[in-house]
Image (cartoon, rainbow, N blue to C red; front, top):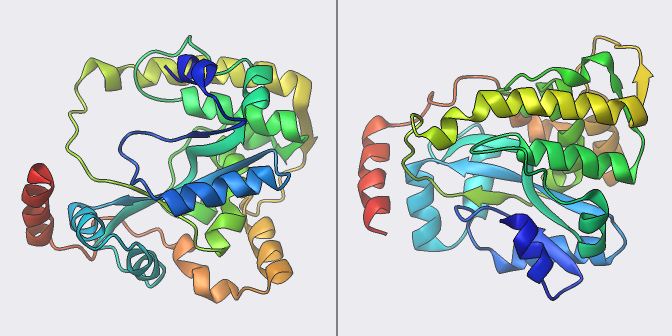
Length: 258
């Protein structure tokens, strides 16, 4: 569908996001301006909201309180932070030069990772330790591993500026065939990533330090931010801790009628 959509796009800069992302026009313009200013692409981090967080955002239309709460370790309104995410602005011509999205993927998962890895490899030589092929979910964004960490580095500037997209909560049936394809897609991705690495990969020795630590602290120093203001990015407690089951239940009812 995205390949068809881009073929019909009338503007030079294009933006990718899913239908369940909150439509913040000002934020989208921020992304487009980054690309218009010379960046090859801009990738936003995304906060996945609880039913409570979704209710508040839809009713108040203001997301900064949710963002500030997240950095103060408040998990009542946020399930987790997706860093990286597939919310990307880029040039239409660059999209076609990459060949668009790989249509070998069916159903849910990994087609976005595939596209993002090809995108960053086109823009610069990827430098990472040999563990880049690791496919491991994370709790603490700055402690992620493998290809997720390599992609997440591109989100750090936007995190420091507290520019986040919001994923609205909605019910999901994980037993649908759409989601059951994820394991097969993971195998396809590993094969495609190995092909890319044969051409673009520059091996480095693993220092034993999580991949994102150095670029995070370096970016803080360069931009004048206090690292202590972002320590929630190291927080690895289960996402349900600190949330009220009753408030989420009530918010789910609200969201179902919104």
